[in-house]
Length: 122
Image 1 (cartoon, rainbow, N blue to C red):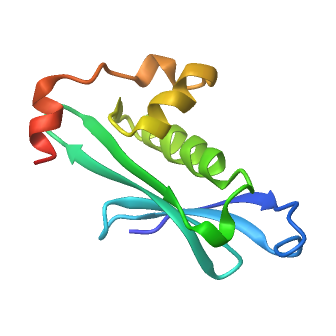
Image 2 (tube, rainbow, N blue to C red):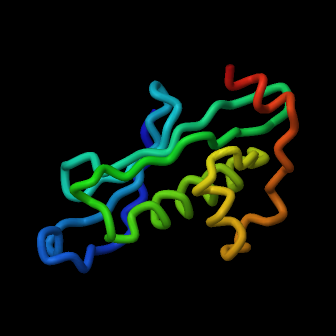
């Protein structure tokens, strides 16, 4: 399954004419951020359907796209989409955890990380 969310035009000289798009790639269990047609990074998740939780455990932006704010764009879209779909967000990924400290749009959908979440990722 792929859901596209166009987020705007990047301000970087090398990508100024290309759209940033966040897509969910359900087959890979990740949200992906694209600049134009090029994959720029991703945020991995694991769903725990019985608990209604989505564990975000790894976010990566490729070096060629660093410094463009894509990690924040990706994280915002991934978390907001997940919350709207009814998932409880479990922030294991250090970047997602840090992002949530200064962005409070999905606070009511965030669950604390428990040992069972870490075990589910093994």
